[in-house]
Picture (cartoon, rainbow, N blue to C red):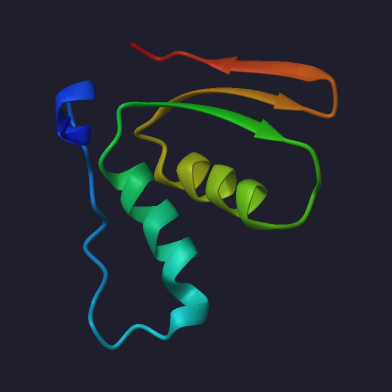
Length: 79
Protein backbone atom coordinates (compact mmCIF):
# COMPACT_ATOMS: atom_id res chain seq x y z
CA UNK A 1 0.00 0.00 0.00
CA UNK A 2 1.01 3.59 -0.51
CA UNK A 3 1.89 5.60 2.60
CA UNK A 4 -0.17 8.50 1.26
CA UNK A 5 -3.31 6.42 1.66
CA UNK A 6 -2.85 6.31 5.45
CA UNK A 7 -2.80 10.09 6.01
CA UNK A 8 -4.93 13.09 5.10
CA UNK A 9 -1.89 15.23 4.29
CA UNK A 10 1.84 14.77 4.08
CA UNK A 11 4.00 17.87 4.28
CA UNK A 12 7.53 17.97 2.99
CA UNK A 13 9.45 21.02 4.10
CA UNK A 14 10.70 23.26 1.35
CA UNK A 15 14.31 23.85 2.32
CA UNK A 16 16.47 26.08 0.11
CA UNK A 17 19.00 23.91 -1.75
CA UNK A 18 22.06 25.72 -0.36
CA UNK A 19 21.03 25.26 3.29
CA UNK A 20 23.85 23.58 5.25
CA UNK A 21 22.87 20.10 6.42
CA UNK A 22 23.29 21.03 10.09
CA UNK A 23 20.33 23.43 9.71
CA UNK A 24 17.94 21.01 7.95
CA UNK A 25 16.03 19.96 11.09
CA UNK A 26 15.60 23.53 12.36
CA UNK A 27 14.40 24.62 8.90
CA UNK A 28 11.93 21.70 8.87
CA UNK A 29 10.67 22.78 12.30
CA UNK A 30 10.24 26.37 11.12
CA UNK A 31 8.34 25.11 8.09
CA UNK A 32 6.08 23.08 10.40
CA UNK A 33 5.31 26.17 12.51
CA UNK A 34 4.68 28.33 9.46
CA UNK A 35 2.30 25.79 7.92
CA UNK A 36 0.34 24.70 11.00
CA UNK A 37 -2.58 26.10 12.95
CA UNK A 38 -2.05 24.06 16.11
CA UNK A 39 0.98 22.50 17.76
CA UNK A 40 1.36 20.15 20.71
CA UNK A 41 4.82 20.32 22.30
CA UNK A 42 6.59 18.26 24.90
CA UNK A 43 9.57 20.27 26.07
CA UNK A 44 11.69 18.51 28.65
CA UNK A 45 14.79 20.71 28.61
CA UNK A 46 15.52 24.41 28.35
CA UNK A 47 17.92 23.72 25.47
CA UNK A 48 17.67 21.94 22.15
CA UNK A 49 15.48 21.81 19.10
CA UNK A 50 12.12 21.30 20.83
CA UNK A 51 12.41 24.42 22.96
CA UNK A 52 13.78 26.43 20.03
CA UNK A 53 10.78 25.38 17.94
CA UNK A 54 8.38 26.31 20.73
CA UNK A 55 10.04 29.72 21.18
CA UNK A 56 9.85 30.27 17.41
CA UNK A 57 6.12 29.44 17.48
CA UNK A 58 5.57 31.81 20.41
CA UNK A 59 7.40 34.62 18.58
CA UNK A 60 5.22 34.05 15.51
CA UNK A 61 2.15 34.44 17.78
CA UNK A 62 -0.15 33.03 15.10
CA UNK A 63 -0.24 29.50 16.43
CA UNK A 64 -2.35 27.76 19.05
CA UNK A 65 -0.20 25.53 21.20
CA UNK A 66 -0.37 23.19 24.14
CA UNK A 67 2.89 22.61 25.96
CA UNK A 68 4.06 20.37 28.73
CA UNK A 69 7.09 22.13 30.13
CA UNK A 70 8.69 21.07 33.40
CA UNK A 71 5.44 19.52 34.68
CA UNK A 72 3.39 22.67 34.07
CA UNK A 73 0.70 22.76 31.41
CA UNK A 74 0.41 25.95 29.43
CA UNK A 75 -2.56 26.33 27.12
CA UNK A 76 -2.81 29.16 24.64
CA UNK A 77 -5.95 28.74 22.59
CA UNK A 78 -6.74 32.10 21.05
CA UNK A 79 -9.49 31.17 18.64
